[in-house]
Length: 353
Ligand SMILES: Nc1ncnc2c1ncn2[C@@H]1O[C@H](COP(=O)(O)OP(=O)(O)OP(=O)(O)O)[C@@H](O)[C@H]1O
Ligand SMILES: [Mg+2]
Image (tube, rainbow, N blue to C red; front, top):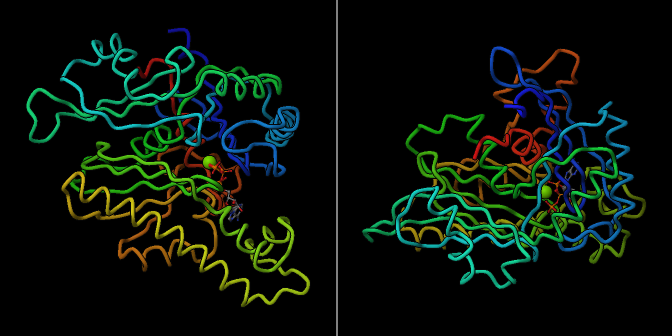
């Protein structure tokens, strides 16, 4: 297999507020070694609701990030997330093999997708037999607008990367989990990635996905609330989130606003959990694995555990990787949860499917 010989793959996670880049190298004895992980912020207005609004700006940030990491041209897997351009739906269809579904997925998808079927790329994950309904199975269906994927791919290619695949953030998150964690344990785990404008919730039972949802809320809500209530700039709001001082702002007041914004995010997650519990019929979620920018926001995971009454563990996407001594271990530990999607992308190989 030609692809396997190219043993450097970059996972490029282009978020609304940060671009994250991870490089994984195949190791001869099996598994992967982390080549690098780094990130750079995007100027507000570069990406809006999942669409690129300033491609030149995005390309230049990716290029800078490549320079920072020392990445020469490389094969890359890019991610696309929720918003209006990607639709993720759980559907029930007659039981068939993966191959049969590959052939009929466009037909099946047509009834569930509000876009012209010719304008989207379709992907799916078979979940398994539908409970209490013989001959039926559950499938997670993904439809991503081709023009949006092309836009992201072009920005990455113009920066010098060779885009070999595009994947959906929520699949990448599951991928990261499957690779790094023990999925054989009998338990129900919620994988949650809280980004800037989007939160992904994937619930797995005994390692298999049973529920997935994208919510249009993220840590950008903290920023918006700080801006609004303190009449400050976005930049100052971001500074406060990182625990830095801003002239004329009482840190305690800022913390109260951050806490209130966090409550809104927990509320949204809690509603998704309620929906999961009522629709799927399992009761207990045994633990949460939390990634994304909010996971590195001070106090956010602890308060989440308290509010939801569920243990929260920070995602460690590097857990199952070889880490060379030359990399900064403190940075990897501190900012690791933000790499959850990027690692999942870099783990994707063409012959997975
Ligand atoms: N220490 C930190 N460093 C960077 N970002 C942080 C930190 N703490 C909190 N954040 C916040 O996390 C968010 C960025 O997280 P992330 O990179 O996961 O989002 P994104 O991928 O850009 O957004 P989305 O997936 O919603 O499009 C920003 O809102 C940022 O302010
Ligand atoms: Mg993201």
